[in-house]
Length: 234
Image (cartoon, rainbow, N blue to C red; front, side):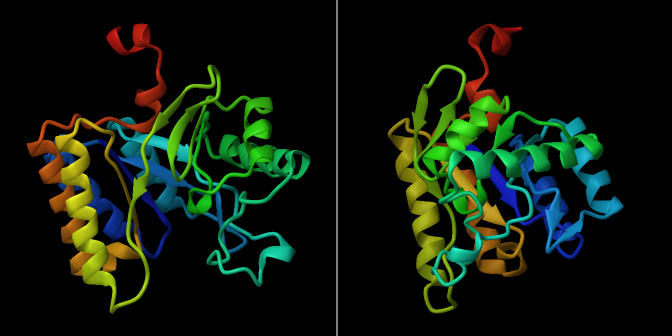
């Protein structure tokens, strides 16, 4: 089972901290999806300190795009204006990855794992990730080991949008986690800090984690999933 948290910023930091405490009590590590820039500005010091603390405590850090800006031609497309790497060719993706990597290095938060915003990565982005030294990319339908080409299949499960459909999304998350765990499949749960502002999605996520654990799921982070077996044993 893999649980990821995105939308980490100064306005939602308390929600992220609350969730990490809940999961730590269950022995479940978080994979933190972190963008070095939000709305054109760098991340403030309290956010950086919290991310470093969580990483030191055993949570994983994954680069979550750069600043989540959509390409100009995408702005009228309904991909919620956040599919930063969904259609980029190799060269453009490489430039953005280099800029993001430099920003992460300045913050002391280097990582070789990548998750594109909205879990959408173009073929050109995958090529650029390999060229810039990333070892892992998690997208909508699986987790890719960029060193070996292996793909761990499993669709990410999260929440949709709209108050009317929220109960359905919550129900689907819990039932989907239970079904995958019972079958011995990979359970991938994703939550944004915006979802945690509402009690329904927050509780649904915790219920999904609990039922997956009940059915024998083992909680790991994304880097642990693709780590060589020798490194896992050591």
